[in-house]
Image (cartoon, rainbow, N blue to C red):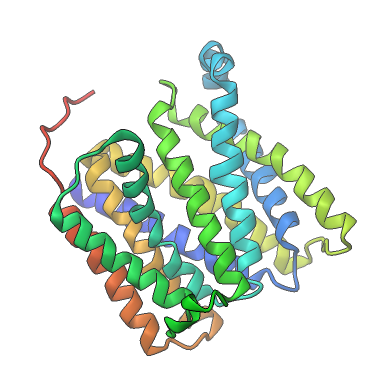
Length: 300
């Protein structure tokens, strides 16, 4: 069972890593906000098709928690991905992939600031390493760039996306007791609705591009693999080995994103990318290994 969980979690990370590459491949085939709307329209339709009976049963709980569930969709789904798809217009997919390693570090910081989550010396050291890796990537190997506040526009956008997804993750502590299908379907609906104004804004600026054939393939990839299958596999892994151990597999996202960017996009892997990736993943591993010990929660 553990082996199956590891396979499921690895596939989920691979799908999410591919999302960064999909955003880069979309250039010239479908515009960022159009892709965001299509992704969540397709994902909502697909998950609703297999969840109608469960949605009816869960509706009383959904109705009481609708603002929170829509918040998940707006911030964690639409805002994060709209910014990601915009960021890859100005920077490399490798940079975007590695900068996502900053999410666990920021989640840790927010948990400490707002909820006084316990912290160890190893965690401080580990996340300092992660921060150094993300900063090195954002500065394209020249940390002096950070002092001059002259970041690449795409890297600056991606750092905003990292903040958005970290806030979304923190708010998941208040998720209502719902079936996983409902927890996917309602936020996906919120994401789709919130993407409509973004596309209207894109049209008003004359930047909208409807998908061509390749654009539709990319849209379906993001809806089926990056949105639905990744979540299904991730949830299965969490159920089998627990959330804390499953969460470590998210650290594979920048690894897969980097490797796919080199293999599919022909982007050049530079020395600072390798150093940054080692710092980011090594820092997260040290932080997880040295986390304060807490009693294991009772099984549900």
